[in-house]
Image (cartoon, rainbow, N blue to C red):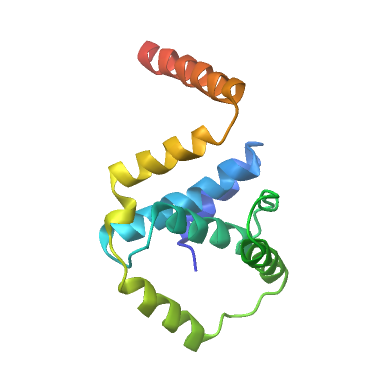
Length: 149
């Protein structure tokens, strides 16, 4: 279950008219924080992000389905998380405990700055050149705005 503060931030993002991926970013942020504080681990930065996205879907964030190149299992997981948002039933305590126990055995290195930077870089490489250029331009704009404040 996501923390109340995370749900509140995601709702504020929605009210501000921000995209579903921005709303979901709050859940991913929370998950990275959990790994860093030692609540549990993750096999990779990608897994930590996936857990956050799944929590977002379950909380009712209307995220698009995974890209066409994703595995069948990923697509099924996203679909079931979206369905879970529609029914308000407590998750199975036994299953929840099993997942938490398994994650506790994983490393905490998945949420390190280096691992997240590596993940961001590899994700950026999968995008086109023009998309990367646009992202850099947008980042430069916000940078100027922050320096002016």
